Image (cartoon, rainbow, N blue to C red; front, side, top):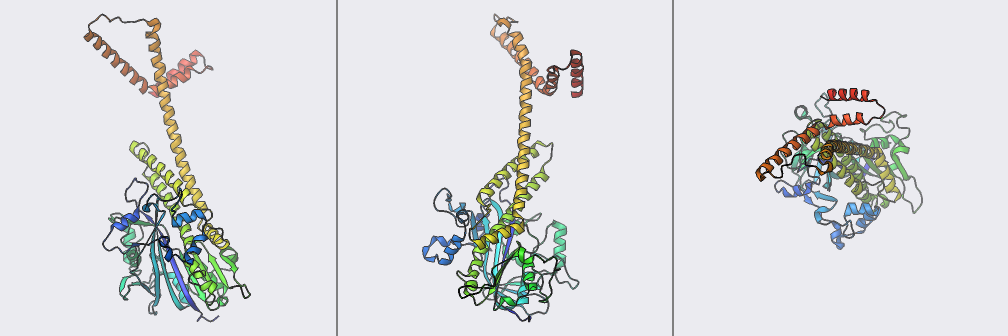
Length: 544
């Protein structure tokens, strides 16, 4: 295959989950989008208008997207205006989307001295979710008529939040030489700084967290990275590795010209290479097609059939390759291209939101454990409050967002199942559920133990008080007859006896554990009285 193979339409959507820091610590539901709207200066994010609000703007593309999903997923994605699921207020919707339109193009130089490649930006969205401290950045760009190896290089290098290492030349490993966000008039809004090795090293050494490349940091503003001393109102932490999850779309004149090595490079996201050379060993890739490829539309024939469309799903990535002149594949509204940008994008968004939310909850549980100081009453109380809140958050996540199935359409169902499987969401969900349940069981058992101790002490006090009550109340006798004394004397006598009773009760409570052990020995019918006295002495001495 010649290396001048051209991708007629190339499109990439980066989906980058982030963990948001609480705005008000201790409050369960954080509305970060409200804080974003409150920032007026240097804020390019504007809320996306709901397409459902105006029927004249609602088209078949929207309808086809809507009916792809099952009803309970529809209510999550699009809200509900009737029934028990309807939101009490606009701010109670499950998902809130904000968009910025100042970045119009991306200029990328992949290697020093190479000609830059220009990409058009379709959208830059920021997704917020009610009752989940997660934001997801979606960045979509496309280009027409670019070489296959340039498209592969884009997948391999573009979505890098920070460098993993540096070459001897100073070039950041696996990163583009430069990335520039361009405005409407071609002005440079922000540029990458991958080569600033000293900056990244110093940041990690000082703050124990990775530093973002400048152009990605700029794109998220006014959100700022969380690190010691950070003062921004809206702060986030990283959840992913330096390579961001993404979707890709390849429209070619003849996709059958792609070799197996080309498909592997697209699916496994490796650097460009020779068409007849696999990037990994043959044994490693023996089950590549079975595990990662959906070929139900590949190699079909006939007038009514569209052929040569392949889906590659690895969890971290999702790619569609097909024929450019086929309307089934390249149709922008209801064709596969339109579905890629909408239905399949939402599938990809949901599974990565699931993973991010579960990782975030697991992290919160670890933080709660780290803050627990056994023996400090206030620390234990705070730990209990946090775990109770996490239990409630997990239950709400399960009933609001967790879906085992999102669609009954065969292809969408298959893609969702593969994404969930390769991301390990089911296992992660079971792990977090087990952690939350174990901690909740510990709290329940601790509460039961405390209640049992309280009942034990009250029982001991009751038994001790019973002796005096029976003795003093026998036949209704008054041991001390002071009824004829003046009222002042009687009040003094009453107060003295009250004080003595209080002291006796306090002493009984203080020694209730020791007394309970003594009573336990007395109640043991298997022991003789000599053994009982010996054991009671040992109990009393050991307790002292």
